[in-house]
Length: 265
Image (cartoon, rainbow, N blue to C red; front, side):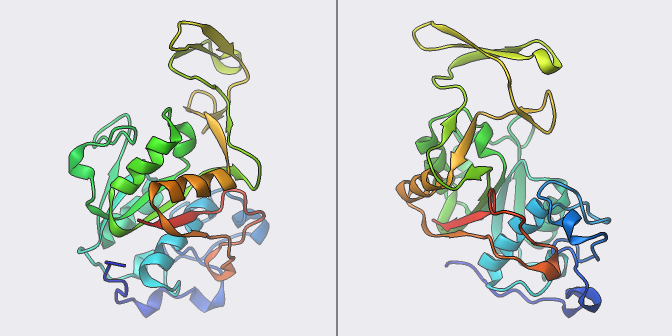
């Protein structure tokens, strides 16, 4: 890997007193394991990290440093390592900005990044790329999406991402042939109206929005076999599913559906 992998660390950022701590900010976790092992529940009283965020950053830390001994907040800065985020949460994007030459991007606001057609200045310039629960919302052929993820990385660069997925079967596309569409109505009555390339119209109800009604529409549920296949076809290697538990860092998976995946370009 073409990274300076072993940054210096601050020994003060070990789990305090042997109690579970957040591997992002280093502070003690409060409450029972049943709370902080829930994927989407904020369970660090300081940075408000969730299990998804902690496990995602643990995967990156393991790829960069080959160990998980200190919180991200305790890692010495190394600005020679470049990174890119796709709508990353401020919970961890703040620390990534402090430690690396990292830039967060967004689809609807500046700085923009459209993974369907990334701008040339983003290409082949990053040592790591993070995407957390984004790809299930992207309206594009998945082969193109994963090829573009690969194109954003330098040779040896790291992709770390999460999506909800099943362990077998095939990816379920909620809206096959999605092309020219609009969402109408409000709250529970919302509908998606799609007009395919031949002008045929299809109306869909029972829409699923992540982050609550009116937030980001779920377009698909991935299957793990399809995810692995897309990664391999895009040119990724050394693919890992990060389902290991690190209870000292508040990482205990009640199930592995949606555990982070990492791969090397």
